[in-house]
Length: 125
Image (cartoon, rainbow, N blue to C red; front, side, top):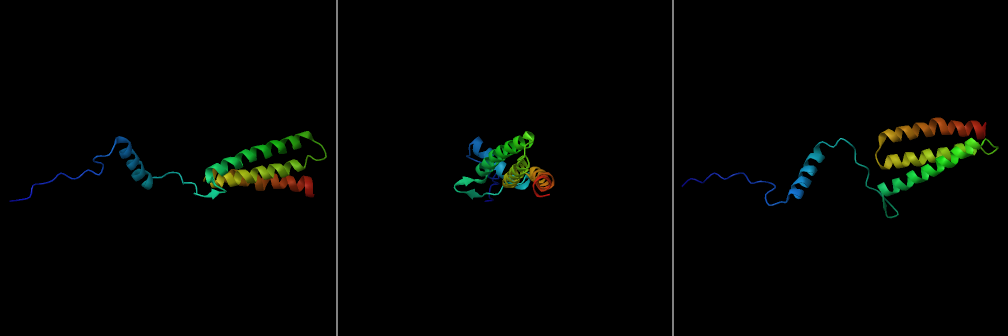
């Protein structure tokens, strides 16, 4: 007696629609990932995304303080560039943690180009 031909077994037989969709996302995502994944780091119990969010809020505060100091045009206005440099360095770290390379380039060029030059011209020269 010859063996009867069997239908190929389905990889997803018996799984719910949600489970099948999740498996397909894993299969497709592993081969065609267009964006790099952020590094999985932890800082004092925070995930890298939560820590990056805190860095972004701190960067916003330092940029606001630096802008106010520069706009006040007083004898201590030069210290505004230090706060702006601190803001850019925080944004650089947050962008690196979230693997946003466009923001890494932007904040690095802003930090090195504008803020350090301004701090040198106002405070050191």
